[in-house]
Image 1 (spheres, rainbow, N blue to C red):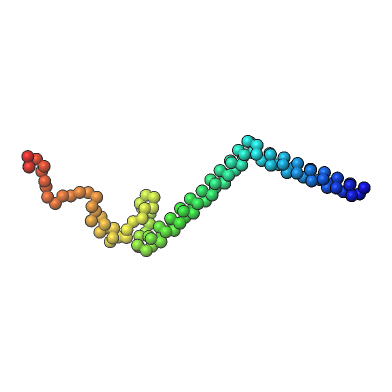
Image 2 (tube, rainbow, N blue to C red):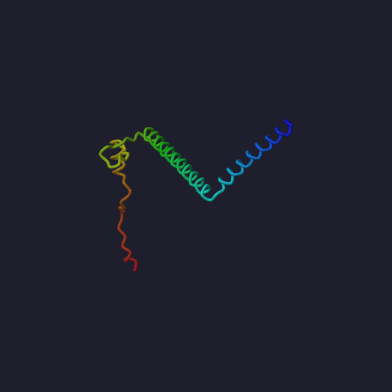
Length: 114
């Protein structure tokens, strides 16, 4: 008699446990739950992407500072956005050798040939 009661109770407990387990899984598969899970994953991915971008920006800044130190460049507070400027003699040399404006050494008239 006790043996039958034991197995009856064990079977009922296993049935209750299995039913609750199945119901939890079914609730996870409802459209609302799937949408919420997708939204959570998207937010998590956004945070990871933001952290990655901040790490990249910090690395870029660190490397730029290292290169500026190696090249002897300094921050010029008079220039907008703290653009790096060459030190005095180098800067003058760079301005004198400015190749942005085209200055021909000879004049050439295209109409001379016709």
